[in-house]
Image (cartoon, rainbow, N blue to C red; front, top):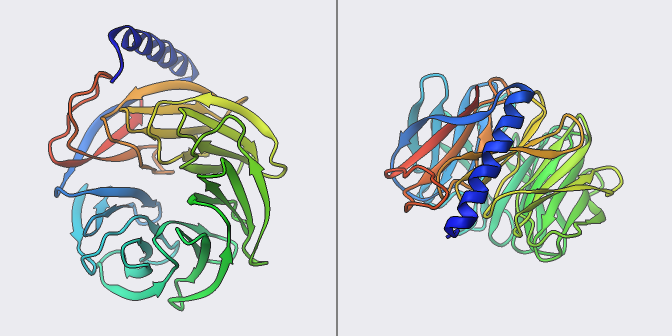
Amino acid sequence: MASKSRLSILLLTGAALAHAAGAAGGHYSVTGQIDAPEGAWTFASIDAATHRLYVGRSTGMLAVDLQTRKTTAFTLDGKRVQMIVPIPGTDLVVGTQDTSNVAIVADGRTGAVLAKIPAGRRPETAAYDAASGLVAVMAGSAEVTLIDPKTRTAVGSIPVPGILESGATDGKGRLYINLEDRNAIAVVDLAGRKQVGTYALHGCEGPTGIGFDARTNLLISACGNQVAKVIDAASGADRGTVPIAGGADAVLIDTERRVALIPCSQGRLVVISLAEKPKQIESVVTAQGARTGAVDPSTGRIYLPVGRAPETDFGAREVPGFAVLVVEAK
């Protein structure tokens, strides 16, 4: 918990950042919430074409129709799902089941499980590669399993030493993975099926979420010591350090609106401008525990899953049960 003096500083800083964001074209705030069945939750993702939000849960996945805000909880096979990757142009999703050591291919509309594919020990995160149409699944066994959702099979495995956190692809066959124990980013050539480099994250401790901005060719990694590192994806050059709040577990990139958004469990959504030199422009009050999320590229709305949380010194709202907070710029 923050002290009263520290809280005052945080609130003043947040107000100044909000003013700066407003000058740049509007600031973000929580505008509503989508109530859903109670239960533990993990990562979120959006299928922009079908306007569906997916949230991994302790007993399957939650699907949300973003146009009607209707929620459907799919039990799948009753196992925990960590991350869900929608497959563009289809109704298919690939989900990671860390307790079962598999990746599942499922129908996102019906929840029908179509295949279970071994994906290393404790697979947790995954990323879609537009160049190959494959899904890269990162596992605790220090390997990446490549899943073909069309054939519903594994088509390759790539060893990547370290504790693998989230990954991001550049759409051209490169995969970038945060290495939590090495404070670095692994660079993986998916077509060549090998790791081709490592980028150091100086001043970063325990990187978790990662995002890639196609316009600037920049990687943004969220770190456990309350900073985000900005790295040139082509060279690995350090492009800066941006302060964030504690407990971040995802980096959301809104390329159209030129921002990176980092949800932090301390009850803050940090907004980083990508228009010029990356810098924090706003720290939005959300809810304690809201550490993952997804951004809808068509509307710019951000969706943050969160469970019941105690009152926080950051002034964040208390959420009864489980909900998805809706955040948007005004």
